[in-house]
Length: 522
Image 1: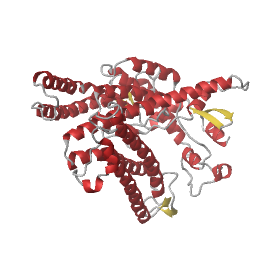
Image 2: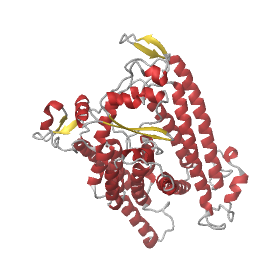
Image 3: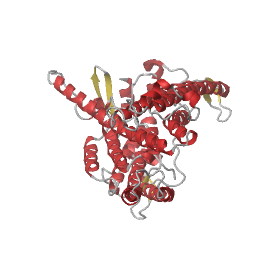
Image 4: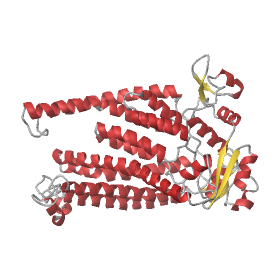
């Protein structure tokens, strides 16, 4: 009740609903409040006469194109402006008495983060706009991402530039995969039907394909820079970039002291304490990396890639595992065992699933370690999590390929492992991250609908119903998109296009709608 009353007093529109799970509040603000916030943050909008992007100002609002329309602010901009308006509400004197005071919460702290830290509220998330979401999903579902540039603009309008740039990269990558697919297909045709060669590893044409890929990669990156710069200019992402406010985290713990720079009271934690915690984090991460390396060794033994005469074979070779990959055995990679099209894939599937499990386990460990390290600002906290997860997941995913490429130096085994591992991983991403969660959510909604018919109590509708329905969604993590971009270099065009569609489905129906942040500051 304190939360709802506080935001009402600050001029927000608050709608609330009491349920067995707790109190749900829907907070919105007026168009005038959005104009005021847009002026404060110098949001770039298109000017009528000059036809260029200029910082918005309430005093000159009529000079901006479409200001008299209800759709003047894009859906992603509305989320940003509402979020910044909510963040502007500060802790007052009644906070400690009503909520239960957090230690060392200084006056002027952001109320929303103080409430979350005190567990007075469980979560804060922007709601999807169902009408826009359904229309955009229908348009994206049947349109080809290769030829419809307007689709990326629609994604930017709804989700903001961070997600839109990811899909722009996916579209650019899918389009550019056409050239190597045609060139590689031509070489395979010549090898098989003209030169009558069964393999391409020792073909005379293979070096030409390698040269083509080197040149293709250089042109790919240059044209990506042009495509990205064009869209950034269109979307108003210009200049040196906007740095999001690097505020002190409400979770940061430290002793009160007077800042030697500002002269104000602040929380301070000695750097020496954090450095000692870094050492512990490095040891824990090292232990997890050893587990990942052990899984790699077991997987390569099961696939028959590590033998006694292999690199470090006297330590890495295990007869009781590699015997399963002997000629005629159950996992014979040459197809000499039973079910030759299925069983040899079992070790690869197992390796892929274990990689997923290890990544999920370590992501939780990385969050806990970084929280324990007690970083002062949000940006420092996020950077520490990214460094840990990137190093671990890169090692986890690529250590097997590194061993085959630079230790055994076997191009045939490297190609087999690369194709099987990343094709299966892409299928796993499509199914486990998009299709399965959507199916589970739909099944759960149908079950609630059936049981709800027997309940005569009043049901929420409109925004409240959407809030309750979206409460169990997962938060959006840009790190996952980045790792997917790194891994997609090994995907075929068909898989890349499918990832484009299923990633959109995941953003619409599985994840919270992300909060867009400004990308430039004039």
